[in-house]
Length: 83
Length: 138
Image 1 (tube, helix red, strand yellow):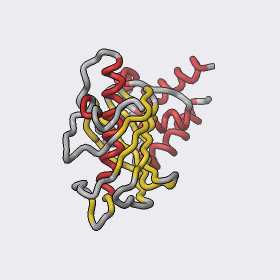
Image 2 (spheres, each protein chain N blue to C red):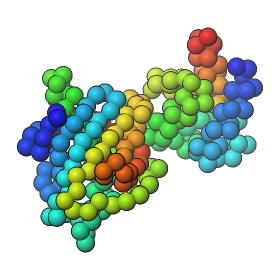
Image 3 (spheres, each protein chain N blue to C red):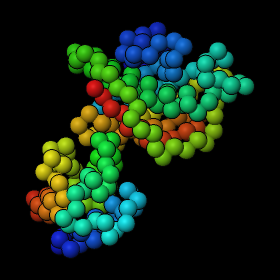
Image 4 (cartoon, rainbow over the protein chains, first blue to last red):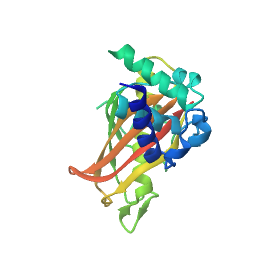
């Protein structure tokens, strides 16, 4: 999947799941702060990631993710590994 | 039947009058199933009907019993868990006293020590309540 498609898909499901404007989902923005995630919300994030990309994320994955761009890169990497 | 009313308290922390599960029918890492007989003296019975809070607690205790049973089988000390969040709650019907409800709890996702549970209670095959619980196990 192209990175632009990953970004478009992510913006779509995150804006619905976390009730946030798509405009706030910018590559350089902090994912946790923008989505106002607490520790329980990460489970919801894992669910929507699996539903939309067919990828399983674990706690360790989120340690590497600070910005949305980190997230897009990780999704791209995991999708490539899946092939 | 894995556990009955006589020994279910060996795997859950709740005690009467707050025990909302009678028998543990099935326990696998991905699914728990229980039964619960609604007595007239249940603290959540109002005008002969068991209230929705008890059905939610029943789902949570089904998980507690399931996790507790699996831990006991594996020789692991029982963990302490609590409900972190309740979402997607739908109340369809409430059961009357003297009914035997059946409950299923599916472990849909797990992230570290947080479990996302999809729970449903049934009476004679008819759904009573469904919800998702986030259970934090410490």
